[in-house]
Image (cartoon, rainbow, N blue to C red; front, side, top):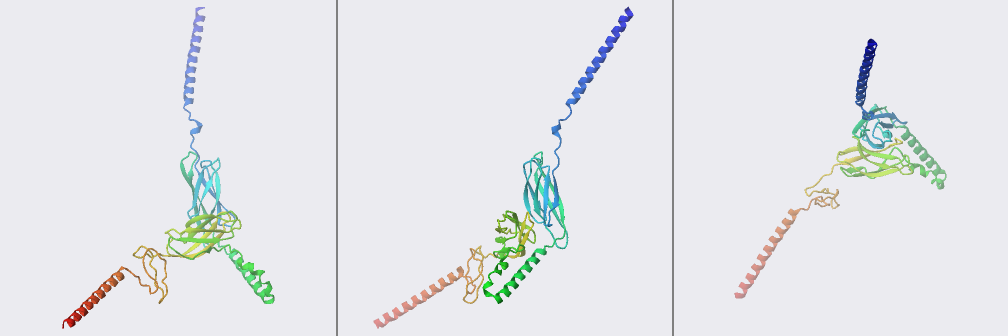
Length: 338
């Protein structure tokens, strides 16, 4: 009976020890589970950019992902200076159309850079590059020239046979030349404004204006309901004197309208303004009038030195006249005394 009791006590003691060890293991496991990091502390995805070409080869679709939701992302093409903004959705995704620079003889690398906030609300950038294949927009000008020649020939033949019907074909020569921009003036002083108009764009389309040869972004205008666009832009001083090209580019259609112009250097005189140049004999002078002084006609400037010379001459004449009057009076007095 005593041996049975001792065995029972040993079993009870063993069970108690096993239970204690199990409790310690359970506490350790629970303590370890507390150290597992929360799921919310994971690093947000890195913002990215993608490019896909649009039909026509002059624009691309540029998209961004993993940016801050419902935020604005700035984009710029380093090849031609074109710039724009993408408004992201709640997931941080958004797209826009960007004009690309092309060349007739070789591919052109266009790197478009995006700048905004990532999903952790920190500044971030991403970029993508598109190699534009050689593109020569020769089809549109050729068709326009052909239509113009046809209209001219029709107008000539019609006017020969029936002069009263010449008003019918007169509308053809005034049709829009979508590849050419019209400038108010083609010679612009450095740093002044240049104004241009063009047509052939989509109604309501955003149109970017540039000055080449070095691409310089001038501003953005919106096309009217008839596809025309116009605006006045200030030329930066970085546009040096010489021959340049004015360019309108449609963001959606990719249509381009160009015109040539020349930038001249402004010469300032001692007075701080532009001194007029000389004209012909008796004619008016020419040039931009600033705050400097000068005259037209023979092109000679009338300065302060001329005024001083006139005053000195007048004083000399006054002195000579006084001496003559005094001499005459002395002679008359001497004659009277004699």
